[in-house]
Image 1 (tube, rainbow over the protein chains, first blue to last red):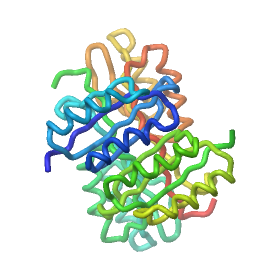
Image 2 (spheres, rainbow over the protein chains, first blue to last red):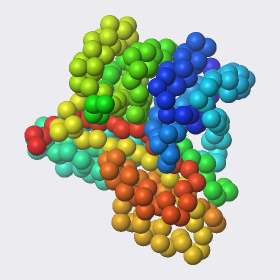
Image 3 (cartoon, rainbow over the protein chains, first blue to last red):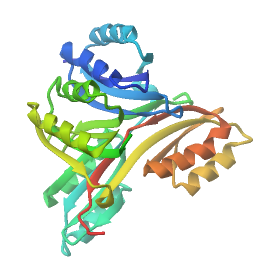
Image 4 (cartoon, chains in turn cyan, green):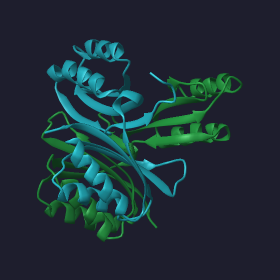
Length: 162
Length: 162
């Protein structure tokens, strides 16, 4: 089944570009594990960060196809050993007077923030690697996760050598 | 031109679903301002958070179209007055011995984290509302932004009444 690859694509911020790129991956049977799109420091240019599970040679082929699309400016496959990768997750979890303190303690351990407190729920914000996010998710599951929203992974090459 | 709408779509985590949804928006001439896709606490189900600028009646029409797509489980337009919204941004900025301390101070003010330090650059991680992200971006611009990657916005309804 291959392993996870992180592909970063710079595109012109125009209607239809994302649909073309998603369509290219879908027609070739790739499943997109996560995808995040946002503008860069130049609002006319967006960056799409994709995570796909595939064999290396399939990735090489789809990168070639991506280069042929108009509005695509630059494509990089990121080397996992030399990047900072992060994702952001919001988790709404069941919580009442009996469990609130325990949940706050879990959030503390993971340096997560509490961003909403209600009678029967808490919303927790956590940023980090996928492993960290999975860790807190496992500990919160027993309380009852009401909703979980994640951004998908973004990544940036390190300036420093590791 | 209408205003920004945040649409949250629960979908089955299958190849092609994202392409269909992005295609639907693109054929109708919507420009997607940001889009984030990731799995929920059930890995068979993904959530797509979209921000689009449009008139309210156009949004109502596209929501109807979305309902007709297979693999789409639930669609919500989120009420901006009753959500927690966040995005995550990684910024690589020029920095040397002369400017490092100043940049660290800016990061501190915004409660941003330094996630990579190199001779000629720093990578800063910041989480918050779009307004906060724009704020730090403006202050870092004079140093030279080498790369900026954002996840796009995610949001979750508050459990508390405001």
